[in-house]
Image 1: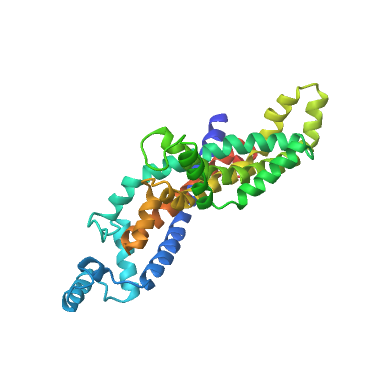
Image 2: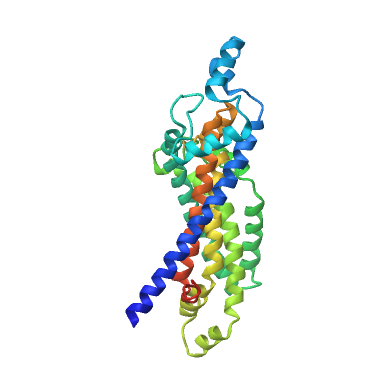
Length: 320
């Protein structure tokens, strides 16, 4: 009987994951249609970019015909989707290499920066949020909320420039740009991590304040448990659902927010590649980059939803 119940729960979990994976299809189609439409109506001729501004008009027109740029919009979009399903995102207009290879070569650097930014945000945001909730209306609580408001309001690009001026030019502690060592990772990860830390701090505080007022917390204290055990084992565990949600959303935000940060610090990730591609009107790379980031963000949200079941067993029981 126990084996049957366990297998049934596993089946429901797998079915839920399968349904969520199916939902990725319309999401990715919508993202692909939106980005393709924007790039289609963006001024600039890919054929003329390839041949140069001084190329004869006959050669430009012949290349446009060869590339299928004279076809109707939906014909080009359908061809783009068909090729994308086969893993073919086209060729970069500047390097003539497959756009997918260009993106996959840069993707690990972007993931490394986003993961480090999330780690910074969690290590800063959760402890400060817990202390602020347990010491509500104290000086520490007020100061942390002011700092969180500043962190949320501060643009990443401005913060990155200020960090370069202070820690690279004035203090000479860290390199201003580059990639390859831990020292190169510190300033970019702090730049994208502090704003997310502010959001996580505010969410942790509000979630903890709601939990610590519950009856089972008062019961745990009445049983003589230490405050540390009450907070870490009872309050924090039950407050994790909204916190994990925000962390997952912030990870997706950092993947997109790393675009400007990578440019400021010359970080060789997907964001910097897309900025360069936009300047050069390299449409295949831009379209492929947006699709890659959207797919990664959707997968992260799926993993967060699955993680809910392991944080709160009551959610696992709801999978049908």
